Image 1 (cartoon, helix red, strand yellow):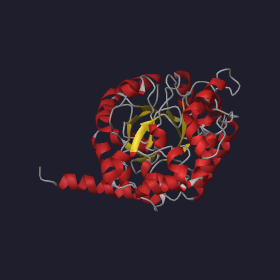
Image 2: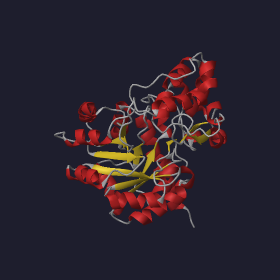
Image 3: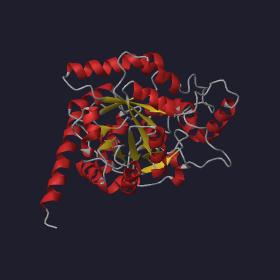
Image 4: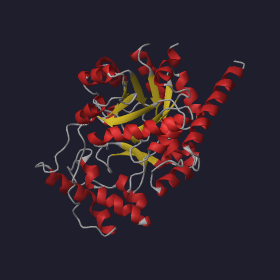
Length: 380
């Protein structure tokens, strides 16, 4: 019935969706997750519209070759229209980022001012147009950082594309539902990576997964499936998500250190090495790295003091202006933990290293089954 609606429609059997982690997820990771029965997701927001058909073909061919169903999702960010690199504000943005990151830049031998980016972001409208123009578009797309307009969602739906939006409050879920998304990802405050909040300021949208999921389930009613995200890194969390009324769990941090990950080696090591004891004190939410609040490992950069009255440039401008510092940070081991963002959720202590994405997916499924069985066997 209602429980299987999402899984049946998107042709996956393990109630686990691999989170679309930009800079971490790969085509190989998505293929492995779908191959193990989950739903693989590919972070497509950084792909130029003209290159999207190639990416979709690569995913499709890989799935066909391994005998898997045509089950995958592409993820896009809902951002303002592309920022122009030669907009008048760019110089002042550059000054602010320079002031903020000055100490770190000089420590790794970079000039005081970051170089101007050649590219900021793609147009979501152009990316969606490219999907709609494909003879066989992708089966599913998910959105974060906002609500695509009704016409865009309708156009995607008319081409048979299943749409998922991201909400961090019940209010955002209601807005997504009325705009016409097919499913809602309820992202709790525990989640690693960028906060999906878009209706209210970030500090007014700090709802934990346990409180958020049932509220979103109630708000969405029986016709819109809910996917739980945030703080779910083993099968106990998947079982809990289903118990709260979600039809699947979206899992990110548990995949960061898997073999198909494209995360920097130091990022993978930190995720794999963090113990449950330390897990809750090692991450924090900060906008220092990208200009948008995101949860990752805490370091000197996350605690850096801001020059008075300086608002960091908006995402993704600050992220682009920090690119040279990030690149140098990866080359200088002593600086890596300070200047390279390494996103991780509060359940990072449960994540392991050395597994393949397929092994992670199968383990989540078997742990979830054990959790449910243990609950059913208890004499209450």
